[in-house]
Image 1 (cartoon, rainbow, N blue to C red):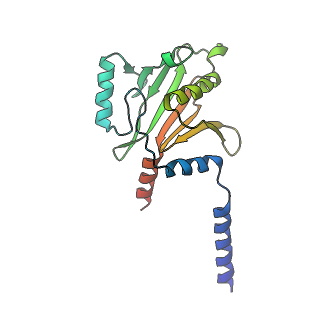
Image 2: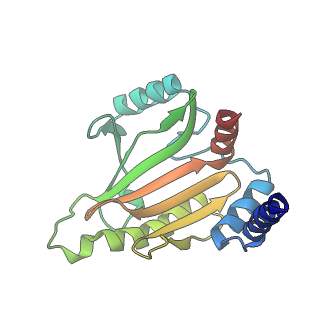
Length: 193
């Protein structure tokens, strides 16, 4: 009798979890991935389909043209000022798993940022970035996603396989991460099996 009761309780818990409504974010991800639309292009001629060698060679070429420069550590620095209200830098370097680019973390910062300059706060940069990223990529609007304790808000948009997350990295810098959700999910499925 106890085995049947334990099995009933376990099945009830599983059903309750499965029946819980999905968050707005999860509904958006599911709907967009279901479209089968694949976005490969990132920015400045970069794409998710680049191998690490392709990425390095392309950055070398762009550096020789004066369009990309060396950033901090291994990051590449790109001046994106023409799309912003004030001089702005973008520092980036992709994340590869099993030779596939799955994410492009990007750090944006106003070049004239100063602690005392209220016109260069990271909150103003985030608001401007929402508009710039919509101009660059089109598609759906950003939605706000809060951490369970409500201490942090991240802005997210998903179009097809491409997820864009936007939030504060630190007092001067906004972090944008573009993820190929289809590749990421495939890699995670393969790692589990």
